[in-house]
Image 1 (cartoon, rainbow, N blue to C red):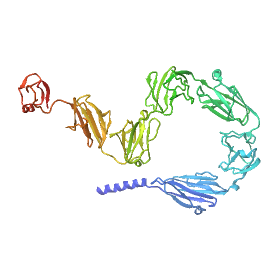
Image 2 (image 1 turned 120 degrees about the horizontal axis):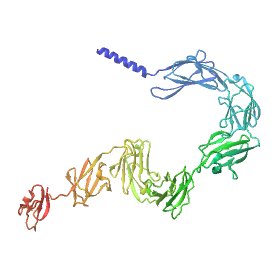
Image 3 (image 1 turned 90 degrees about the vertical axis):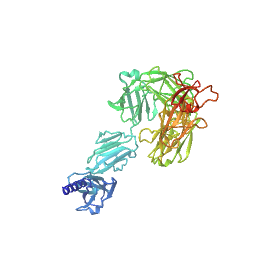
Image 4 (image 1 turned 180 degrees about the horizontal axis):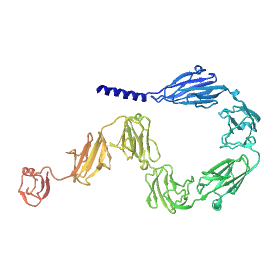
Length: 628
């Protein structure tokens, strides 16, 4: 049984290896003339996935052909004709398929193959010819289908070509963006595609190319449908880049060859992304340009006017704020006293608020309610505004009178760099390995964005408290600084950190908690601290006392409790409940001890009797005390 099992395992492994092993391709390439061709093959290594290219020695492929191996399961074989030569046939004899001819061709192979390629002197294949008449050869590009240029002279040219590989001809203007006046084949106008012509020519054809436009007029007539009264004036026009000042919106006179530009006022009018040019719908996003090649055009503008309405804005200082309505690049003129009316359209129902240099937006009230937060020195967009909405904008001059600092162990551990910048204007803070870098900031600069790209580790502590990244596994953080804060960044090492937990059975006794000297407001929920962080707890000592991991803590010279975090730590704040021991007061009348019901328990108790009292509440010398 064991032998059978071993045999089956070997068989399974053999089959698996047969599937994973790379399958080479054996290629036989036959060429008729090695001097007229060059060849190479390309493949991707199936193990390393590296791209490879190898030249084929065609001198070994003449006649019966030469054989080579492509070390992959698929590959490409490329054949190129040398200057003055052409490929006349390219056949895969294994499956009967053919490849292209001309200046170059290729085969895609996914199995063994026998390839046959023939060639010839290029001129010997050009058995057809046509006549090309051109008025200005300096403005015309004429090329064979392969892309090879055809040299032209003004007047009549005889062009020889291979009817089986060099037609259609390609024709265009020498200068990008300009068009030819006309291209005719045997007297018939040929259609262009964005100024380019592709013309199938045959032996004996006559090709007329006119680059220059005659000095003749063209007329463009504009119509607007049923909305003419409302939308007349929705467009402006230019001729050769110059605005036509006296354009009446209905008729434009120009000359053939001139560029006509139509510009639509998309702030006030909706063009539905189309205009109609001579019966054909043409895409229009606010600008359309064409070169006049005929004597008359009819253009229909299907526009509708957006509705307009006013909103009202008030600012506390017109020198600190600019307001731009909708997508306009022109700010409105603001009133220094009271509200400013701002006209908006239904398609552009928003305003952009831009603070001046070194100023920031402090608040934006839309109809009395705060709109957003953390405005900073960036622009604020107030969107979806309705008629008669009110916007009150408060701004201030930026004052950067606070200081914080960042220390990093090794900034080079962030392999692809880092970003540390303030929210307001994206101003970066440059960090230096093992040095503390200080920077000034203001209220609206928070939060700071801190991101480190592919570091070895990434731990950030603010005043000793671990900062949580944007999401688990991220190395990007938003950190809010206060005056005097210090951040520590560990990229090359993973420092010890410990959980600090607070428990309390009395409310309001803690007056403050600080870490490394900086007050921390959210202490009650606990935090994770960097090893060595000093936690300072200030309490009302008349109400509470502090224990650290169950041990009573001692206060420092300021009456605060201070603990250096070297392990997971529990800080307990409990009510001050009484005395540890009771001694006889020197001037006491007696030391009578009563319970809380007023019953005398011990008359004139000695110190030893008082200290041996069971735990509980008592009245001694008229005062309530607790025996713990």
